[in-house]
Length: 461
Image 1 (cartoon, one colour):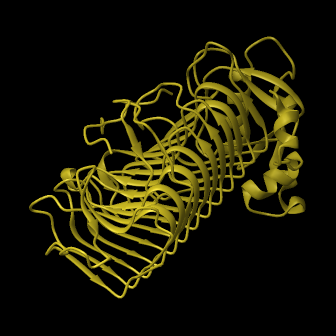
Image 2 (cartoon, rainbow, N blue to C red):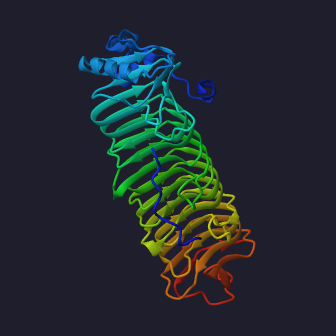
Image 3 (cartoon, rainbow, N blue to C red):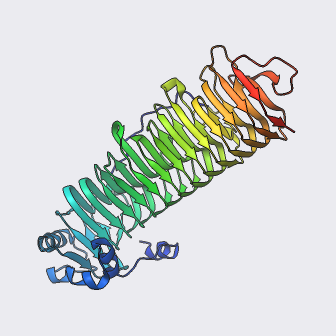
């Protein structure tokens, strides 16, 4: 496990519609989308939409339509109404959304990036509603497709975003909702920084070159974003690094975040990575195929629950680490972890990983099932970084070691009780000095158990 990886992430800058529609997210008609955005029924809200063509907007024009559409949104908002876009492609560059803007569309309306600037931009707004249309980037443009800053209640729903060399949705200091959108071929799908009561739910995110969903804060503090029920798959790490990129969900310095019930597949590094977020919950996610750690809490964090997840085929399944950086206080319970494997470290090239579950400090590991891993079913500590860990009532099958425990001088106490260890290839419980075996099988009774380890009620067969 690499101890000196960079912990400060670089700041990320900020249609093939038929393919996305057939991939599983069909949009409603424009009026139906508006009904959801405006909060009423189709019949009750239809008269609150005005056709953009009333204001001179021209579908499929080669000219920038931003000035016309911006003026239309301002006039409609003054009357408490929204703007409806008919089918067509609209070239837009840096449209500034007004207070109370409502923009919705039929399923064949697409806003196309016309310059290296956001298509839609809003700042210092109380309320904003966008729904039902497509947005598409252009080759060579790295600006976000949608950029919002300090919007207290923004609601983005059923938007299809395709092809963004930068970020699709760049939200800074925003609250509200991003729901049932589809994002593909972006660098990052959603970047939420310094949020206030944001929910990211039910979105489909595919084929991003660096990251899926980022929830960050400029400084460590409470955030409370909820990331629920999304499907995230095929996330690369084109920008390299050792974990800054390649994540389905990345929480950075953001406290009180809940990541729940997501389906996450095929990420270059990690399904869910918490870097420095306190009181983070990672619950009920279904995860498979990761190049580094499936579910990860690391660096300066305090308090993380990782529970009731399924993790298959990751270099390490679940990890709570960096006691050397004050990372501590975790519950890892009720998870199924299978198929952890060894691979070269991206920085050093050293062959590492291969643990089902790993923890270092002030942690309870209970009621998990780990099967078919190359090294330890459960690894406890690295060198001197081990304190007050309890591992109880776990089932560990077909591992090289059931448990691998650090026995370096000065480590803290460990309790290993009531576990079932089946078909361990080399030892049920072994002591490690850093990465080297320092004892025989401590469960066999053939040698003294180190004083900091308590073994009771374990069964090996």
